[in-house]
Length: 535
Ligand code: FEO
Ligand code: CA
Ligand code: CA
Image (cartoon, rainbow, N blue to C red; front, side, top):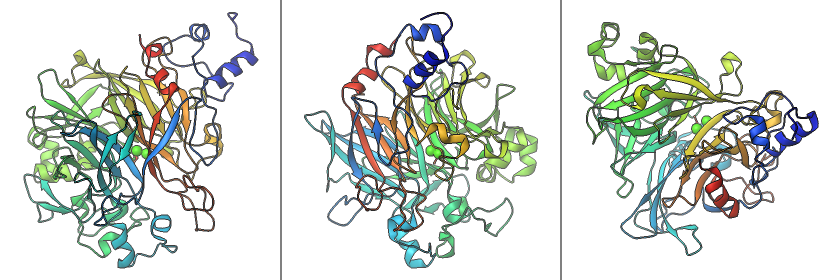
């Protein structure tokens, strides 16, 4: 290659990487010249809008389980619109428990409720479709996994499961919540439990302003379950800790209440547990919780990020007179975490979603977009804590990668690090906007591989594309690190009737679309996890 790339060769090169643009310089660590000198060993996927799960050559996928699948002969069923995934070992080699969050339900596609009626009959069905599924999976001789029906570890938590609220004070007169719902992303603790987060709870149970008794009626609480059941909004929007082998759950109030996307757990140098938390709404904040001890999340301090100053600000009523004035006790502060964050000056971000922490302690935060600020593509924010210590209260931050035509991705959402410490990223352009002018270059939502090591560090490669209206969510590696589990969520979400479906994935023909968990394997998977992408 010559020093100056011709327009044609530059375009071909960018297309080769799975972008589709003539504009801008390549981002990341490697210079363009350096990258050109090291031709990537596979051809990235071009954007597409087909109603299928498409991948780069040599990357194979297979369905593990589809929504509504029977879990046992007693009639227990897998939930709807699967999201976060986490794998745990059992006492039996090659048998694992896969924890699966269910983010939402679709009244038409899942229940045939064409008018989206809010009669109790419909609500009762919907309440069984949300929450969390725990399913046993078994590794086969081919290295892939199979769901094990009727296994005693197959369980469901839904909107009717009683779950204790761990709190200094009762919440709306109770220490027990009716169920968990809107479970989006999550995390794993060092002691073998899983955190499943409650995100858009107000869609189901509404929300109340501080000091008000009346639930706000907005277009955002479209499911209106509170019209039939006693479901105080203050019982939702928490981080739920769950034991994967028993299904025992509790809601932690110490980690605050907001639209919890995920809960990424790491450890401070002094051993305390640190949990990074995003609040997925326009102009909401990034938080971190530092536990009081190394074995529990029940007590500790919640902080909000002040990005410009590089400081974590404590949301502690006992240490801040402004918070003491605004809230009658710490329980009330935690219920209205967003209000406390505003009082202390937390930075407003572009929908902070999933968070990953690499082996050096560097923190990657996906900020999806901000429609109120006309920032449609989002970015990956990188935070380096002082002394690379997750327990530090100061940090430096920078934009690691910006979404847009140059990088090829838009609306970054969920992430996972593989065994080499490289990043896997899913995108979530809303189905209502997909194909609009801002997003036409992107095609359907996609899975990107972003090496953080080796010559390709910082260069996103598109490696899989989702069916129509779907997003990929919950990327998660098997315990041996060889297989990627991924949720395909809400294909056909914007279908208006059963005769006008926007997707028929995965069953094809004229069938209803279904969310599903898929597994990726094959020669390209081995390549992406191999020596090429190490330092
Ligand atoms: Fe449930 Fe923020 O995605
Ligand atoms: Ca999202
Ligand atoms: Ca998400």
